[in-house]
Image (cartoon, rainbow, N blue to C red; front, side):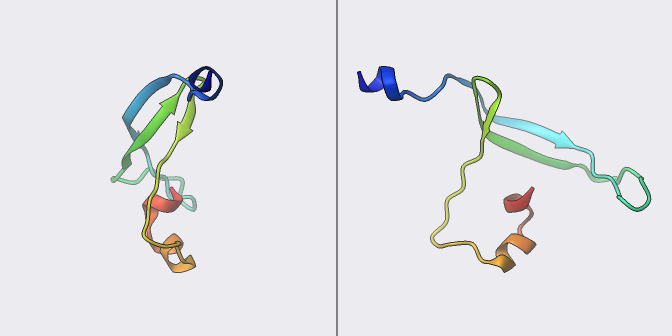
Length: 71
């Protein structure tokens, strides 16, 4: 009963790579270096799940200096 009622949605992909071109907003120019990364989990229905763990809470300084957290 637990698995039937509380099971997570089916998984479509894990560690899915992505590449996003970065654009200079003022000039409208595509930069030479794209943003590459991995999406931790994509569930059925194209639900993106990004998993983060840390020993403590993130500070405002962490959020402004760590691109992975805010991207």
